[in-house]
Length: 180
Image (cartoon, rainbow, N blue to C red; front, side):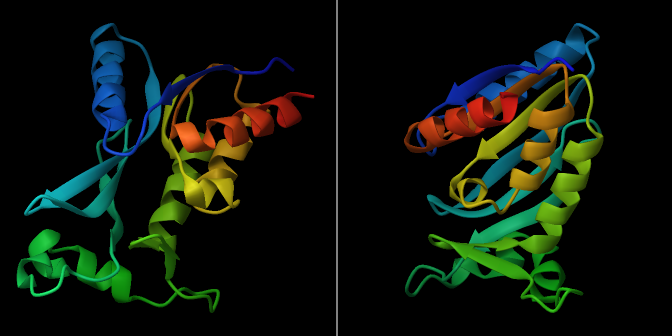
């Protein structure tokens, strides 16, 4: 079995990795190439990145992925319904496995439901696959890691993975370990 060709888009948070990946997606589409995977869009409110949405590259469908743990002190404009009117019901639901529906990482709470959806998309992706991003949750084996791990083991085409400089060595070590 051949292993995938892997390219990393390395950049600090808010450095433009998602914007660059979205441009790659558009360029590949304009050339008639099959492109798949996930983009993670940060949504800004009053100069603060308040939520994230996960986008399926193939369909453009989006799901609420994360929200800030707490609004900035005294800033009622960061109410989740003002940020994303569809987020409330997703974030309030209980997980069927008895675990909480949220994973807290840093100043954000992430939806397990969005990660489940995203991992299903990654497992069924083909062609050029974009993954935005390998972050702290993935480094701990959570988030999109199950889908990324599956692709590293089974996908034979190109993978383009966004990663922060602080996690690049971890991701490269995982790639080397899986390729053995």
